[in-house]
Length: 393
Ligand SMILES: Cc1ncc(COP(=O)(O)O)c(C=O)c1O
Figure 1 (cartoon, rainbow, N blue to C red):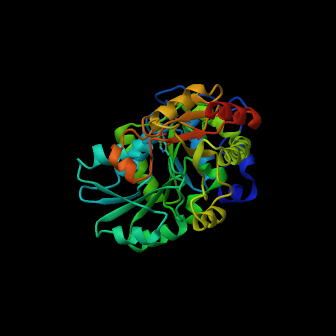
Figure 2: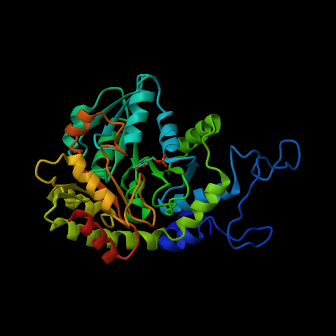
Figure 3: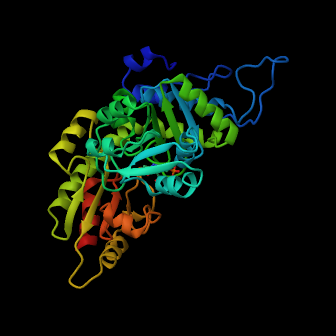
């Protein structure tokens, strides 16, 4: 199947995930896209080739993945990268010294580190606002604001922002809008349909789905953005390797069934945690306010499978010590960074994923030392509930 508009409209999510860009290999009929391990391509004549010249620019295995993902995100163009951070980096390279970025205040620590410790030195300034409140966005605008960087749902507090409303306001000011859709995946949310110019994913998470590979992708419908990103990637070289592309493509085929199960388990776990006496508060997309619940129902097909909660310390106990007790006691939930794999993971944002954010900034943003984040896997829900329940007792 090709990735034309007809294919995208005609077939459902999993049909596209399994077939788009993945026609049988023309030379052998191999049903599964082969792993093309080649750095260069033999040309047919001077100035003539079969569409491939050099591995940094293109690779057929990578292209199959890019085509499939573009279709899933309702986009025309996909470019894959060595990691999610490499994808974010190339989006940032579209900016020039003096340009400004507006980003949500609750965002992945690695993105914060890139904005603050790399691009700020190059003269690209990022400001952070609570994007769940569109008025704050408008107040923070600057004549040089060039990019709106949106993560929704956010990491780790699972706040939600109204993509359609913010994208319209940003476009009024001539800004680009990029949405990090890693937590929702295209199964649950398609930001391009809501007005975003670029969708970014860490494919290391749900898209790959098996915690065995790193990758990133940017998807867009605009040829000019695609051409610029493609140029930048080829210039700096942050490409996805062919083997990684092959592994991720294998993961993409089951993204739909995995996400449905991830979410089913997360809903069950959330209900359990909400009534547990050792839990102070549960964070899940839409739980913050009626407004955010309404945004979830409007722009997502489900709240997803990431959830965070605050534990109550025992009398006289430091929050971090209480967290240590819990994460040491789980047997199924592994203490690890990352998310989105079939196995359940547990983490402590303050000392792990969000340690790059200064303590005071974390506190202001509501990321307390008592906060635990879980990536709910696709094991049996009852086993997950029992495991966390025992750890909290
Ligand atoms: C929301 C989000 N975006 C981007 C990234 C970065 O991706 P990678 O680790 O593949 O570089 C992560 C990693 O945890 C993430 O959680």
